[in-house]
Length: 309
Image (cartoon, rainbow, N blue to C red; front, top):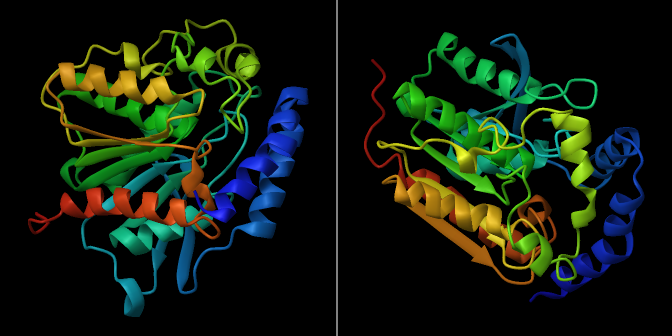
């Protein structure tokens, strides 16, 4: 464990976890995340970010300048940010989007989907699906689209895959950082890792049940993809999570479900790291290595030339 990770875990226990326990509304979560992103997390030089409406949803398209890390022609990454369905935006995740764009040489499209409680379920899923379909208008084809996300956004990425799976047309590949895949909260790690998780308090399930679900069924695959009726064929999937976070089993059980349906899943479990630690690539060596593993997974999918017909 690096010195930086020790300090991050300590800071999370002293500040982040107590803040989330006391949070009475989404306003302060949004302010804190926006402020922290502006202050601490900056995209690398030569980053280009442009807003475009995609499928009726505002999306931030992130690339690197052509002379530094030219994006692959005809390919794109749809990245869905986390924030418990109530906070976050493509702007708070811009540094992560830029690093993903640089490491994978993909243009990254991040939808600014509607947030709860103002826009409860299934608003976030509907916007994510609309943005995915909107990529076709920009000339992208399903077999050249990679879908990714973190936390609630990782769950949305897998929920989108579940929907596409029922249509028989799936993307190139999918990856998720610490995804939230079970809104029934039946994973054993919610209890097992209550004290071990340095960041997330398990008692704040109301963020999902009250603010986002608002009375809708928690086992709906659009919020709990672990309960979707998965069938082959499925694209390669990469799931990354911490061994000590309360959402560990959301990834472990999701991998089991996908494998049972014939999918090829890489499950990358790390010890001692917090929830979505790749967010801290600027300061954590563990985050840089973890992000590098995901980038390699994505790059491996593009060994063959992209069909631009």
